[in-house]
Amino acid sequence: MNYTWDLDVLYKGTDSKEFKDDLNLLDSYIEEVNTFSTKLSRDNEASTIHNILELQIKLIEVEFKLADYLSYNMSTDTTNSTYASLMGQIQTKGAKVSKAFSIFDHYIAETENLDAIIESDPLLKEHEYILKKTKEDASHMLSDDVEEVISKLNVYSVSAWGNLQDFLTSTVEVDYRGEKINLPAARNLAYSDDKDERKDAYEAEIKAYEAIKESIAFSLNSIKGHVNTISELRGFSSPLERALNSNHMTRKTLDAMFEAIDEYLPKFHAYLRRKGEVLGYQNGLPWYELFAPMGKSATSKYTVEESKEYLLKQFKTFSQDMCDMIEDAYDNRWIDFLPRKGKVGGAFCGGVHCLKQSRILTNFDGSLSDVVTLAHELGHAYHNLHSFDHSIINDNTPMQLAETASTFNETVVMNSAIKNATDKDEKLKLIESTISDFTQVICDIYSRYLFETEVFEKRNTSFMYGDDLKEIMLNAQKKAYGDGLNHNFLHPYMWVCKSHYYSTRSFYNYPYAFGALFARGLYAKYEKEGQAFVEGYQKLLNSTSQMDTEDVAMMAGIDITTKEFWCSSLESMATLIDEFLELTK
Image (cartoon, rainbow, N blue to C red; front, side):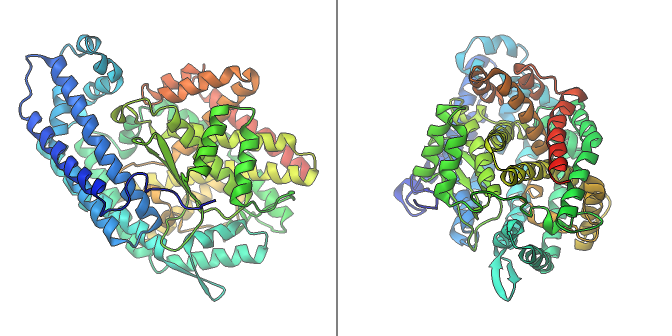
C-alpha cells in the first residue's frame, strides 16, 4: 500500500500542460466575470441572476481545482517555494473578481421580487438558500470598492500570516533525547506506552516553541486585529457574532450548549483526577499524561493496513456505501498517512469537488487514537460524498455541521469496540480512550474558545507578546480543566500549534464541541432506529449547506436551542465516566 496521497489525478505537476491551461482558463473566466459585472441590467432579472450563478460556478471550479492541488502539496511540503509562489498567484487572481462578486451580491440583495424570480428558474431554485441569505446579509455588505480592497489585502495579510505559522511549526526542530525530530513526531509521543517518553517529549515540545513564539505571536496579533477591524466595518458587534452569522447559527444555540457544558465540567474533572490517581499523581493529571494509554488491548499498535480492516469491521453493519468509500480512500490513495519533515501537523480532510473525492492528511503513528482520527476524517469524506451533488457554490457547510459526520464516525467506532470487548482490561482501554477524546472536545475546545474570546477583546486595545498569550492560554486551561489537571503542568503554547487560530474563519473551536454533542444525539437515534436511520442521516448530511443549523437539527427532531438536548448528550458521556470510575476504584 502506498502511504502518500495521489494528487497526480489533478495535475502531473505545476509545469504540466493541463496546469498551465487551467491557469490561462482562470484568467479568461476572470475577465468574463469582470466584464459581465459592468453590464448588469434590471430588464430580465431572472436571466441576469442565472448568468451570475453560471459564471461563478465555472470560475470557482477551476480556481478550486488549482488551489486544491497547490494547498495539498504545500501541506506535505511546506518549504517548497514553487507551490507557495503559485498559491500566491491563485489568491491574487481570485482577488481580481472580488469587486465583481460584490456587485453581484448587491444586485441580488437589491432585487425586490427575489422570491418570485427564484421560483421561475430551476438553477435559481437550486440555489434558493444562498440567494436569500445574500439578500438577508445586505446590511453587512460594504461598497464594491472596499470589498475589492479587503479581498486583495487578504492575500498579503491574513493568508501570509497563516502561512508563516504553518511554515514555522512544520519546520521547527524538536531536540528530543539528543535527536532532532519534527513537531508532529514529538506530539505523537504523547500517546507512547512509556511514561518517561511522554514527559520528555512534552518538555522538548515546550522548549522548541520558545524559538518561534514571538514570530507566531506577531502572526496571531495581525490576524486577530484584521478580523476585529473587518467585523466592525461590517457592522457586527464582535467577531463571534460574525462567525455565528457566517455559520448560519444563532447565539441562543451557542449559549444553550455552553450552559450545558458548564454544568457537566465537574464530571470531566473527576475523570481526569481519577486518571491521575491511577497513574500515581496527586493534585490532578499533568498535561503530558492526558493521552497516556490505560488498560490493555490485543493490539497496542496498528499498521496502516490493520487500521483499514479495523474500520471496515466497525462500519460493516452501518452502511455499505461507507465501507465502499473507506476501500476507495485506502486503495486509491486519498490519504497521506505518515509524519515527515516539512509536513504540517494534525489531521484534516478536504473535498476535491471536481473529482467527487476527498483527500485526507494524518500523522499516523499506529495508536488507537490515530485509528479514531482516521475514522473522524473519513466521516468528513462521507459527508462530502453525500453533498457532492450540489454545485460548488452551493456546497458550503457551516463549520459546526461540518463536524457532525466526523464525530458520528468516532462514536460508531468506539461504541462498537466497547460493546464487543470481552476482556476487562481491553474494555477499560476503550472506555478511557473514548472519554479522553471526548474530554478534548469539551474541556480543550472550551479552553480554546475562552482563549480566542479574550484575545479578540485584548487585541482591540493592545498587542500581545508571547508571554501575554501564554498567560491567557494558561488561564483558559485552568478554567476549562479545573482541578482535573495539575496547574503546574499545563500547555502554555497551545495557541502556537493549532492552525485554526490563523485564518479569518474565527472561532473554529466550538464547532468541535457542537459536532461531538450533536453526533451523540444522532447516534442515540441510530441505536433506537437501526438501519431505518441511515437514509434520513444521509439526507441530513446532504442538507447542511441548504438550511440554517437549527432547521437541519429539526430534520432529526432535535431542538438545539434548548439546554435539555445538550444535557442529554452530555449525560450519555457522564454515564460512561461513571463506568470508568467504577472500573478504576
